[in-house]
Image 1: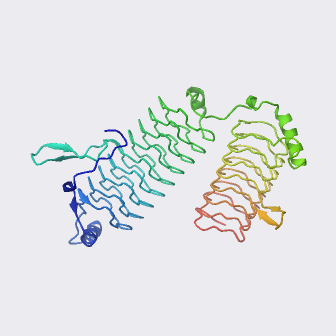
Image 2: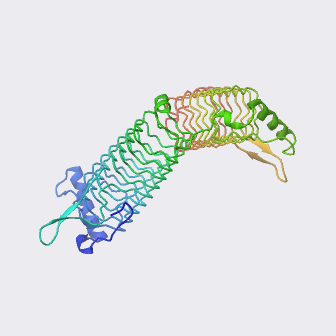
Length: 449
């Protein structure tokens, strides 16, 4: 059987249950968890629970081994330490579910929605479910693939810290912003998966297939990449450590291009760009640094307004007092860069990495766009990483900063008036003197004014 085949199971394998009867089982399980008389652990192994609703229930320690749960609703349910061995969860809604320490060996999660799910220490390694036939012989259940399958699943924002996923089949899965620190992904199939913003720090990717996977802004520092297939993997903007850069063969992966590949000197490109800006594009040429590595370059005071710097690497570069008005710096790596007093009005820094950067006195506010009708163009720092950055006296007025990581930043006297800071992270941030009047702080974590 190939990794993409799903034969239909014999209907006789599964026991049927109505929503009404299921509700009684769930109520008894609730009493079981509370230690009340009459309580009984939910034993739903081998039941067909497809299309039924278990949302919001505490199903910790429940047994679902070998159950069919296709398109089952499990939103915000607690499945802590639940037995989901060889369970068919195709297209199930597991949004916001707590699957910590759950046994998902051999489970099929293809097309399931695990957005914001908590999957710390869950086990998704090999698993084969055996049942006895009419003659008493042990046979393998047909739908089982012998490996955990989460192909086409959506795991945006899922926390999978220390999960075991060796041999897991994860092809074309959306793992955007998932937390997978220390996850065991030995021989896992991650072909063409979207791992944008995923934290894989310390993960074991030995012999994993990462061909064609996208790692924009992903953290791979400390990850084990022994005999890993990186052919066609897009690692532009990924955070790698020095040892990986020196010892891993990235020749078949998509990596940032060297400054030598620009075809002209940096000074010449900047001069051409100034002419392009000054003549409204009639002369000169727009600076295009997309996917180029300009680490440690001195570009202090440079005019890069409206330049294309998408996925560019500016680690420890000097961009102080630079004009970056409405420049595209989305997904750019600006770790440790000096952007003090830079003009960043209307800039696109979506998913940019600004950890430990210096933005003292920088302007990240809106810019007025004149046309048939005048309007403001706000700076975009959505999902940007700014942990440890110095934001002293920086202006973020009206900025779009949803889900931005501002942990450990210095933001004394910074201006966040009317900024959208929904779901931002402020853990250990120094907010003394910062102005948050009119700012949207719904869902902000660790915010203290």
